[in-house]
Length: 491
Image 1 (cartoon, rainbow, N blue to C red):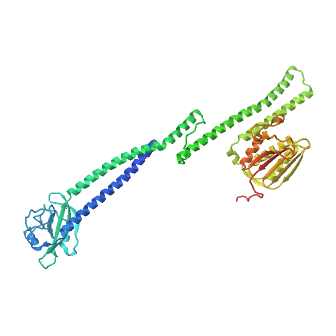
Image 2 (image 1 turned 120 degrees about the vertical axis):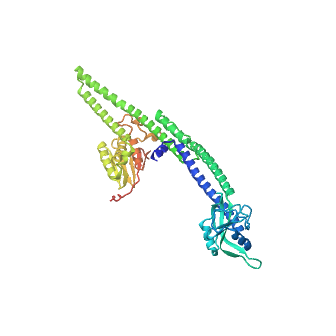
Image 3 (image 1 turned 180 degrees about the vertical axis):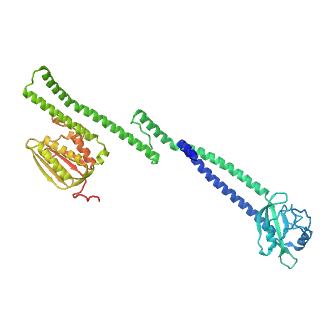
């Protein structure tokens, strides 16, 4: 059994569906055919029983009964061909009398004798019960017959009603040959129809399985093509109005390949942009180091002032490289890694920590702050880095002695500087990776700071915008969902 089950599971899906459909139809057809056969059999037997009862219930002249009983042998016999008095019912009907001791007397009109049974003798022994008994039996030649045994009703003459003759029962029967032939023909017909139905169901199931699994075949071919060629441009055609499981699976596959293709393009773009951004500081580092090395090799010392400037340049380039690598690591972190570190964060504390770092980087600037309590769900270190990046931008573009206004009210953080501001045509690009304003190319930075800000804020469920401020400068607005009070800790 287990071996058959394993073989069935190893068959192709369309074959299994066809076999299941054929098996279900075979079961249904078999159940209907058997039920139909038994219903027809019951109806035919009911008709035979009704005819027998109708014919056997007519009273028999008592003189005929006496003549027949007188001519009967005194001991039970298996058969008899007596030509004594007739108890005619219908042509081809068997008719005989049976006594309580089993002796039977065959009517001259009967085609032959019938074998008696215990039930026949019981009716003869107790005829007053008035009940009859139907059964299947055989005649003396072994032919199947339908037998009815009832108490014998006799007619004593004019003016007298029918009465039950004591100690004798009337057995009447009809041959079952025609009925059995009808049932056999019906069984053969049902078997033939069932076989054709099962074969047709199997063929229809195979056709339906092929038609239904055609989209799955296309999906399989597409997956195999992607696995073989890594071509993520493959799309499976889907009817727009279709909403079945196959259509949903196809749409999901198309969505997945689109996302993978977009992710690959972003990855390639990130690598290209990172390579481009790394080339400048690396080139500068190599040039400065070569100058220092050549000075050592040739024995011609570099003037102290120039040497100090070279070392300062090397240090600045290394700092820029470290910052760029840190930003790249931040952008490459997966969503799963971030989700593990999400917790309730006091945004006001994060802003205060970022303000302390901003005041150290811009000691000549005046930074005002109005910070109110607000609690959000985010990754603490990433959120602090995002706010530091916003404040660093404000410090970088603020004029010497300028002012930076910071406010946090009901989850809305605004940082406004009084610098030159961002041109309108550059605002749509400020959150792009590695994008830097032409006027800021000479300033330090990797071009990834605002990209990290946008990503961190979006992951926390908020949004961030940059706009030109009235009166000059730039205002950065960060909106984060949360609450003014911390939620109770889970027990």
